[in-house]
Length: 355
Image (cartoon, rainbow, N blue to C red; front, side, top):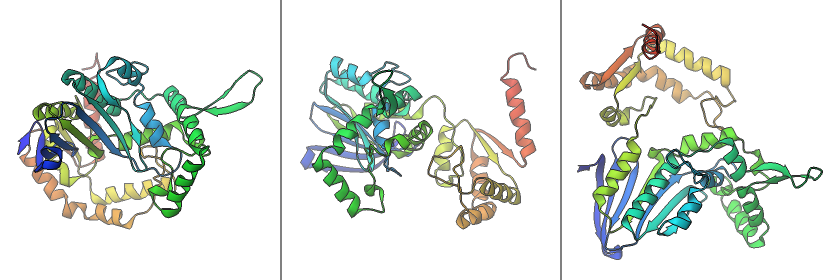
């Protein structure tokens, strides 16, 4: 069953919630939706992202605060505060857990509920997280007076200082870290005040780019609102006006072809691909490339080298088969020179005053 860009994965009637529970998967992005329809007039929505940290800088916690400080569609300074004062919400919050970040809202008024959902969707996917926002919500250095000492400050930094001043909180945190020292639960996703100042704005932005995308999202709806409208709202938010995806993800290629307008396939000789991969590894080995998230140093991976060498035999035929049957605009380049010529042509066509 396919509806509004979603495919139904599972459906059950649960007496415990007095309603029908459906699990949907978005065809284009892979996002999942747990939709519960019952007679509860207090309608609820939530967006949850997997955000396991790699350190205790509190990046997930700082991002949770920051995305609610204005977005592209709602460029106000503090939309969260405005919603608390001016909406009919019955619940409005955000939570950072050791391995996930959740954004739940609720309202008994249908139109108000839809407004809240729209604000939250725009906030998490299109936030205005500039460097000033990062310093305000995360950390910065300031002095109380021109001659006073310099101090670390910031919304999350100050919040976590309060947490670490509580013996009960410190005991609970150290107990968890002692039980799970070699995994994400051995870190403090909220942020350790001694470590928070190590977080850079670049790492902060990179964390949003790598974790806050539809394929890493689980949505939740509850209540008596129409399910078809739930799917329509989410599909409109997830589809967007334009998107670019790179990478040879063969498993999802058919679904992406259904939604995309054009494909650029760099069908280069495998010796050239292997040479470029090895050159990149040698250049960045032990360091993080500018296009990667911090904490992902370049390394020599034998499995990846084998994948490159076998691509022409194991995956290329299927890619070409799908592209030949596809009715969209496909460009297949056999060499870097062909690709460069195409890009130059596109640039000239999109530049005013050129012929």
